[in-house]
Length: 136
Image (cartoon, rainbow, N blue to C red):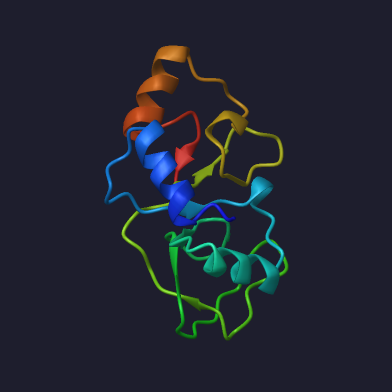
């Protein structure tokens, strides 16, 4: 039984007090995917969105549809050309950690080199209005 099975979806709606029209998505741990296996498992479990893929271009969560679109992903393996991704309606927040020695992107708010005061962290988390990282 997968995450997207009707029984599990109903349990999440009931126990997490989610609205019935909630759309379910997936984010792979540490943003590592397993290529075809990941996408086949997500489709089989009726997961609607995947936000695990990091791209050089600005990106959105991708609905798991069956149209072809080629992308150059940051973390290999990249999805095959036959996998369909279509732009979604929710933004994936990415920051540039300009204060770290190495610089670069930060996909987790708590990985920025400069630590936020707890009040600012809460405001940032709730409203995405800014962060210790500079938003891209």
